[in-house]
Image 1 (cartoon, rainbow, N blue to C red):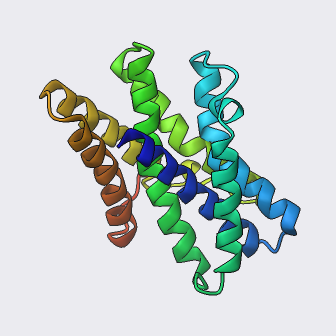
Image 2 (tube, helix red, strand yellow):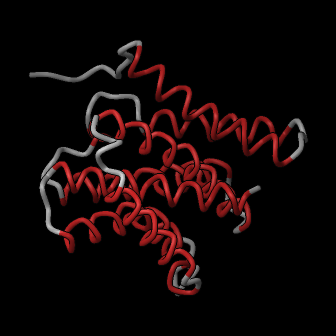
Image 3 (tube, rainbow, N blue to C red):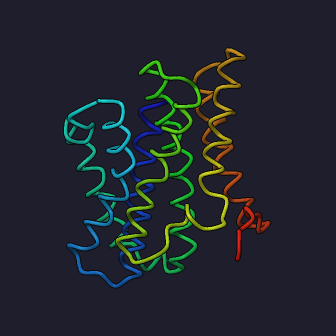
Length: 199
C-alpha cells in the first residue's frame, strides 16, 4: 500500500507541474523541467535532510520513468484537462496528501521524534509545489493564506494518533492521506483561511 501511494503521489505532482507549465506557455523542455521538479523536489529535500543519499530517484530509475510517462500523458490529454486551474488544484491536493504520508513514514523509519516526522512530511509534500510556483513566477501557495501546509500538519497528528491506537497500517495510510485531501478540499470550497497580518 505504501509503495502504491508513493507512486500515485509522484504521478499527481508530475501532472500538477505539467499543467502549471502548460498554463505558463512553456516549451517542452520547460514543461519537463517543471514536472520533474514538482514531482521530486520535496522527496529530494527530505532524503537529503535524513541523510538518505544518493536520493531515492537517483537510486531507482522507475521514478524517472513514472514522471516522464505522467508528463507525456498529461500533455497528450491536456484538452480533456482544459479547466487547468481546477485540474492543477485537484492533482496538487492529491499529491499533498500522499507525499505527506511518505514523508511521515520516512521519518518513522529513521526513528525521528513525531514532531520532526510531521515537519518532514510537510516538507516532502510542499517543497515540490514551492519550487513549481517559484519557477512559474507565482507566489507559492504555502506562503499565502490558503490552508495548505496546515492540512499536512493536521494529517500528521492524525497519523500518530492512529499509530498510538495501534490500527492497521493500510487503514492509517488511507485515513491520513484522506484527511489531508479532505481538509484541503473543504478549505477551498468553504473559503477557510489563516489570518493575514497587515500594517
